[in-house]
Length: 235
Image 1 (cartoon, helix red, strand yellow):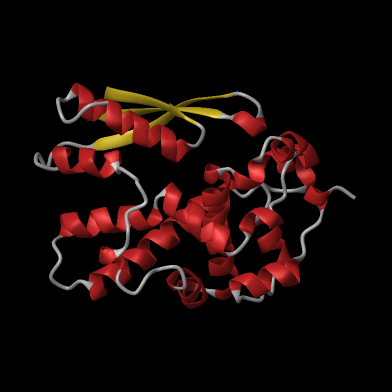
Image 2 (spheres, rainbow, N blue to C red):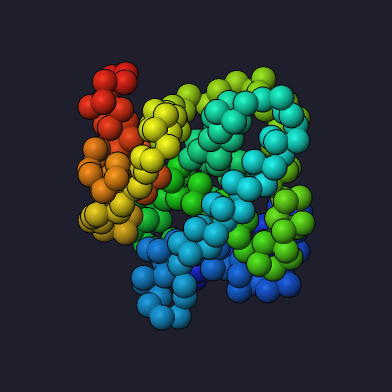
């Protein structure tokens, strides 16, 4: 049996300190699109769970920061939250629970280092959050997430991440009628080496484009290009 076809669920549950009632939710959270594509209709990939987990993570972290820093202005709260939910931070969190060991990957992804790839681990970490949320509710998801949040996140060493999306939002929100939207316009390459193309639009006008190995990376690069074209910083 290939390593990618087996998951030691009890061992993973011990790492995350949560016992699933519905094991299928956990298996879906651990199933990368490359694995699901190989299995065709017999297995769902974790992309929908990732979408939900991203929102659950964001609201839990936002609530934590809101209460932890009652005098911090909105802009600073946004920056601090972004630093805690960015891909690099989630990659670190995923490593703490040995998430890479338990991923279900397609053969191509397995053979090209997918278990250590930052974008895959970050997405799967969010998918696991969603699985816990659906299986045990918000309280269970919150307990899981808060395990990774430092007691004083403002004083933590930065992870070397520049949040161009937040920077762009801060520039745009000076004019309340302006609206920024990120649109996925292209997807290419094999499952183990995907490239996503995202355009960032201001009131339906394209102001930047980015290409990355994850949608989050592509959005950040699109925002970076938009800031450069607007005269804010260097691309």
